[in-house]
Image (cartoon, rainbow, N blue to C red; front, side, top):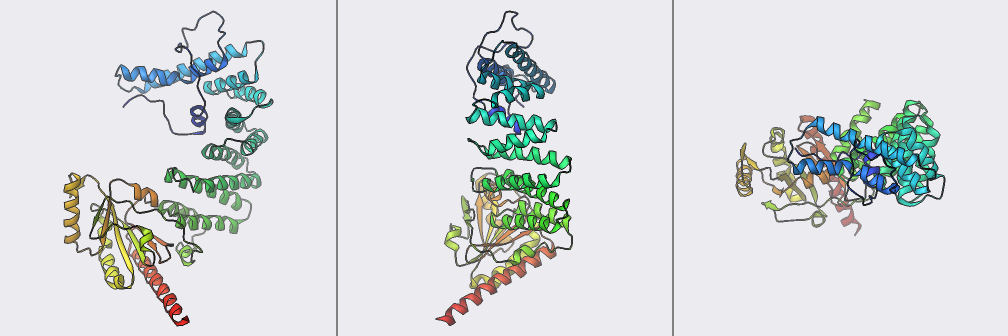
Amino acid sequence: MKFTSKVLPTLVTVVLLATASARGQSPPTANNLSLAPDTRPANVLFAEADKYLEKKYAEFNKQKLAYDSNLEAKTKQEQKDLAAKYAEVLHSRSSLSEMDQFYLGMLYHLAGNGDGALEAMGHYLGGEASGQNAQLARAVVVLYSTRKGLIAEAERAVADYGNNQPQTLAEWFGMESLVTELLQKTKDYQRMAAHAQQMAKIARMVVPNQGINTLRRDDMLFKAASFLAEAYVNSNRKAEAIATVQDLRKLALALPSGNLLRLANIRLNGLDRAIDLRGVFSELPKDASKLPEIVATQWIDQAPVKLSELRGQVVLLDFWATWCGPCRYTFPRLQQWHEAYKDKGLVILGMTNYFGEADGHKATRGEELVYLRSFKKRNRLPYGFAIAESSVNDLNYGVFTIPMSFLIDRQGRMRYISMGASAEEIAALGKMIEKVMAEETVKSSETVSAR
């Protein structure tokens, strides 16, 4: 394991990673600073402290040092000490410009000095601050003001962030989360609801972004809805709490995301165990959302096809793997559905990946493909397989466990997400397939009679 300065993208690291660095001489350690007055510009002082970890880790890796948690902790403390020292250097100067105040605030932030960061960023934002640096300063203010319980200051900073540019949705969401959590602790549920609504708005803005990690997207959507539902429940607005989670479930179906649907189901069940978790599927979607395209490098007993080319047919995407015991439990019903509906427009696609193994042994792609063909024949699976080189389809559809199936109607609308292999779940999926097939047959006959 190598030393690395990259960590999970929390609000703190977003602030630091987004900060532009300036070139300067090699950073000194906290213990060998010159006693002579340091007259270097504020941006140079901050850049050296900011890059301290990165440069030290590069040295450790060049020396091929084994990862050592104690050495890592020691180096991080050195960085904090260095940032604190440079902050004092700046603070001692007779006069500081607006940008000096910004870098002073960032040094205090890097050193973990919340009081110093708030004071410096207050001076900076009290001037003509704008642009990226001003947004970073507001993020720092929200971070430390929420830690100190300064609600008004935090609300003002996050509101200013939302009214200015540039914006990073993940950072904005994180700021609103901190304010919402503080209001949750103080039991101010009316204001908590307002900020949770803003979290939900920002999370929805993330949805069209194809580049975002789907699990991160789902986490944002679920966190916002959970906070909002809690605020409603504690404000004696349970019906609105249930409606909030039901809307989240509808979104999970539209995206689609099995992972988000699972999370929403758990939350809804916590609100009211009497609610039918399959009720969301009884509503007919108004429009067909653009579903993620199938990604496959190999097809078995199925010509390469796109979902758009299957419009007019009912499609069942069944996510599975040869090593999955519960998946095998569903095979008989999949066979039955294929035989019963294949001539009426049902297309079943077995969605799987290359896993680098076959029957419990390591295998090359070629060997695994041969095994998949043999597996299909031995288990008498009459429908086609789509095989991907990675988990791209799983991510696109929010598949967190298998078996998991997605039922798409003739208009290309997601109608049902089936999770697991319980007898109850298989029966429910069967009823939904029957419903969708019959539903389309009725529409077709009505169209013919109208002519």
